[in-house]
Length: 519
Image 1 (cartoon, one colour):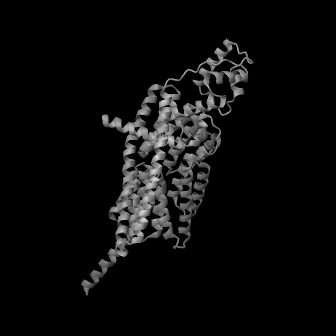
Image 2 (cartoon, one colour; image 1 turned 90 degrees about the vertical axis):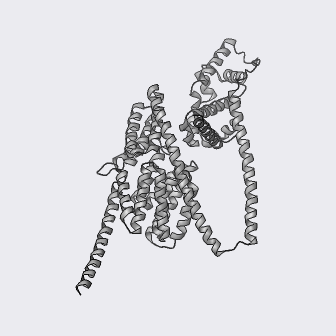
Image 3 (cartoon, helix red, strand yellow; image 1 turned 30 degrees about the vertical axis):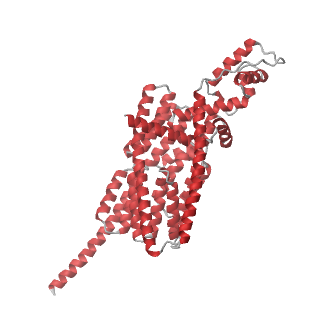
């Protein structure tokens, strides 16, 4: 009897200890979430402790999701990818649809940053099909928020920043009702990074300062604070308030170093180099530029590893599904015919794409070859007798045009023949005739070609410009709209700006690889 009683006490004691462990780990998860944006490294330690010691699947999934966000804050994309994959695998193995849905939505910002937007969309489509059967308020809010988030990133990739901001705001309204703080914080940080592209500088500055006011407290959101200061640095740079720009960039850089976020360290260092270039401080320009380039090499390697991890997971997942399907179905003639038809269609599509790409690449090469050739001196035509331009006046206008070409005045959107003539202290007829005679083109063609050559030079020599949206490049070079910029760009180079930038990126990567192989 006594031995039975002892066994009973042991069972009761074990159950009580297990319950205590469960509650203790839940409190640890809450604490890790509280300090997530202040001390992400501590959140990771807590999550790893739970992963090693807890036997509760839900807690293990939540710990992996915490690690996903914490590593994302630190810019460690490979570890973030591994954590979210582990969360998805655990959730799928236990058929826990709510946590599958949360894992999928948590991965959307990460996958989009890695350029895997198609993977993010497929994950959401697959998971939402399962989640629609839950019929719960929380699942419905996650689905709506996830859909809005997908639409936001899609709009952003299409340069429709206004629409993207609307979708991000919509997504946050759903996440606030759940509520899910991590998703709210991630979305808010993304909104902060694009706000200035939608609204004017003063309104953007007001918005960013209001975000900073909300980051104070016992557990401030250092990640959001870093993003806000980085964006303020850009705004002040545009206003040519370089001292204030440096101040905000330095604050953002200090935070990025504390978070050990190499991606933002690189971005901010590159931005600082641009400020010091404007100030003609050569020493600091090269210092920050070198730091950014060094970090870029490290980031590129880490991102490649993160992408490989995703593809390995996708391939393994597909292999598992394929093996299970093989047990259920037998290939038949119809399937083989379908596959053959797809192969033929794919071959035709690839062939068409190859030819089109070759044509674009030839135009790309031709443009640079032509730009390297010495400019042909046009024979001076006889000036219209009706104008009677004095030779001295003609020579003065030619010299002023050379000075004009070496300045940035042609990037002003209001630049016109009348405005330039007034600036040159001459009349429009004289100026138009001199441009036609000495440049071999009319005024509009002359200005547009200067603008396109200017922005192409920026793209060639400043890596940052390759990351900018087409709308920003259009505005920077003096065009009033995205569409007019694209039309003129294609007329000058023979290919659209998006294709030109893609080819230029590829060329730079090839050059960099060749240089590293030589070293």
